[in-house]
Structures are given as structure tokens and as C-alpha cells.
Picture 1 (spheres, one colour):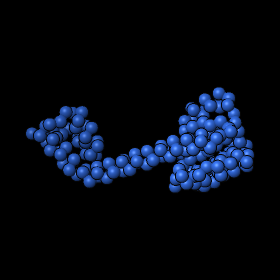
Picture 2 (tube, rainbow, N blue to C red):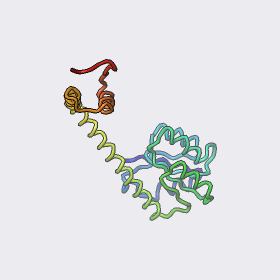
Picture 3 (tube, rainbow, N blue to C red):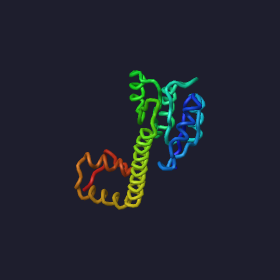
Length: 183
């Protein structure tokens, strides 16, 4: 299950966000709640949530400041702004911080469900990409000795350009002296 952190200074809003959504339907659970930006930052550092629902106007550390800090320590966290402020400057700053979505209060159940479904799909897509990269790295590790041998055969047979030799020798961590040659 993906962990969700809710950061809003209004207990009624936090309770509403927590209770009107069937989180398990999206493979999500509310792992924590915070009433201010500093608490949200500390909780996020400890819980490492996958998703953050955050209001812009929260005490001590604004939602935008919180997002800016979290992007540095939890770059993969999906951030959804849920705010009553429709000022364009807030939305622009949120976009520059690359939030996943920006919702205006009051948020309806259908609207929240649609955003959470979109978030779930993005998280699944990310997991799939990570699995693909891991598999590719494993295959490369298995094939590395054979690839290196193939490179050395091509090198000895004169089948490579100077650029290819430099590129491949760096990849295979082979040092070829400037004063070397083949006869």
C-alpha cells in the first residue's frame, strides 16, 4: 500500500479527507496527519510517504515552502495541493515545484477519486519502470564479461573507430595508454 500524508491546519478538512475516501480502493492508506508545515516535514522525513495532500496556507512553514523542502529529500513523492486559495500566483509556484495536481476546496468525492486514481496509475507506472531498470541492470551484469570480451576482439581485429575505442574502454573500465599500438 502507498502511504499518504495529509497536511492541513483545519482538523475538519483533515478528517474529511481521511474519511470520505475509500483509500484501500486505491491501494493507499493515510499514514499520518499534520496541522502545520514543520510537523508535516518531520512526519514526511520519518514516514517517507508516497503521496502528500497539502494545503498552501498552513502555519510555521507554508505549503509551498514545505513542497520545496520535500522535493529535495523525497523527490519521488507525489504532491497534490488541496487549497481554498485560487490565486494564480500560488498555482504558478506550485506548477514550478512540479506538483502532481492542484485542487480547489471544497473538493468533491468524485474529483478526489479521479485524482487519486490518476495518482495510483502514475505510481504503478513508476514501479514498472523501476522493475524494468532493475531487470536491465541484472542482465547487463550477467552479460558484462561477454560484452567486454567482444569489445576486446573487435579492438584486436581493428573493427572500431578511435571514438568507439575511447567510449567502450571507459565503459569497460579498461585503460589504454596513448602510447600503445598493435601489430
